[in-house]
Length: 350
Ligand code: TXA
Ligand code: MG
Image (cartoon, rainbow, N blue to C red; front, side):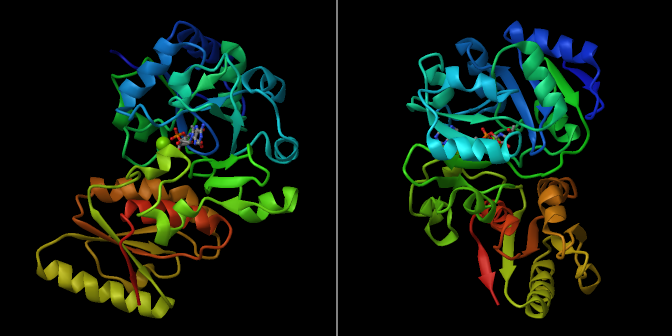
């Protein structure tokens, strides 16, 4: 298949291109598009055959449900059985934005989207290209991250091209995304909202809006290997680059010393060593490939660059990657969740 690739201004997308993309969605095809979190791979959510194509193109396990994207709050009621009170507050506070909510599904949502579950994940993205596409297609759009299953989620159109060129009808290039990590997934079907996947909308932000918020214990590092997460997708070995990633955690000066020591040991075994450094620490290392993931004083920069950095180590042909750990506070919780998955939970404490 010849994949059409079109660049768009994310603030003012060309309506002719959006129309062309919307027609592909209506005709049952697949279009990759930017959202503020990561790029999504979209299909008409109400068409079973189109939804199946998403799973095929990504090589995604069929027991991993998809998020349904809408372009306005008015599109929500027909998709869900009811809207819990706390969900109403979260919607008013965070939509449009990087927050996905889990509702009891209505009958029009096919079970191929929810992987057989009676709940459905819904998100109203902020990105203007995403919203224009959904609005013009006049159907809710099912969209997982637009990567091959098991690879880091795409934060640039070039990542999508690398994974899906020739497998889908169209890719809309809206430039690099804003957040860089997938949306926060919150289950609002119980009395107390529960975070199933941490993301750009942090636990602290959610609690300020609705009071107590739980975190699915299965996503906390020490439990992640033994328990079954409530978001089926969280159980897969996501975001893993080809290189073996090890996280080094502790006081920063000790982390630097340990990474330099590990680098010497690995290089002695003729392994190529990549080091995921920060603005503050980059000059302290001597590896084969040192990449600054972001600024420790501005964790949002780390979130924005994390997946691109993991892909870059693969491109550079590294055998191992040594990564500094970050604080678990606020957005740091989501950053460390993704980094731990990339490392297969291999964390050295120093
Ligand atoms: O930021 C995002 O959320 C991006 C952009 C494209 O919107 N999408 C995304 O989709 O990350 P995906 O498919 O890669 O991740 C969806 C996550 C998975 O962990 C899945 O298991 C969970 O949401 N999920 C979907 N439906 C669910 C449901 N009914 N109950 C529990 N978890 C659900
Ligand atoms: Mg994904």
